[in-house]
Length: 165
Image (tube, rainbow, N blue to C red; front, side, top):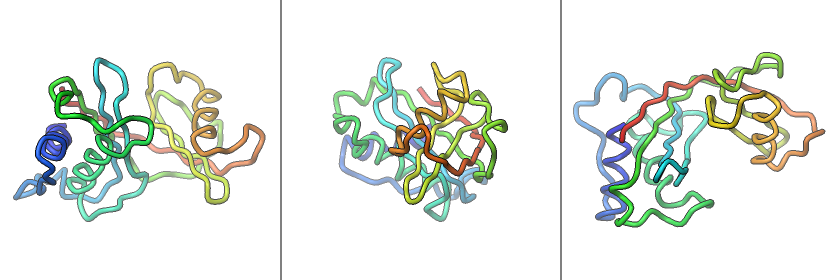
């Protein structure tokens, strides 16, 4: 999505936080949770998001999560200005999470949230090499620090995936 790319380029290149477009297109004016993923050479370079809306508009959600993906994802160093021309972007707009059972999951169609106490792990749907519910749940549990035999609450969600090269 162009807004994610513009946000990262402004922040990494000039230290600026861009304003949402004015007027806001209808699709960006709604409240929705979103994840912004950055890739470089096909490999993940950053991914941060929200599972519930944290800001007034989807545009604000995308701007902030794009900046955070480029600058504070703990798995990667901050994106450098030299990398900007090599990045591709994906924005996943999440539906509201719904409680579910394990048999209601399909990793190609649904993302998953696992919860136990204050620990929570989320995995987006339709990811390479995540083709079974067992794999999806194992990764989400690992992200949350939840053991394989601990009981969890499950939620599923769908995404609208938007990409921009």
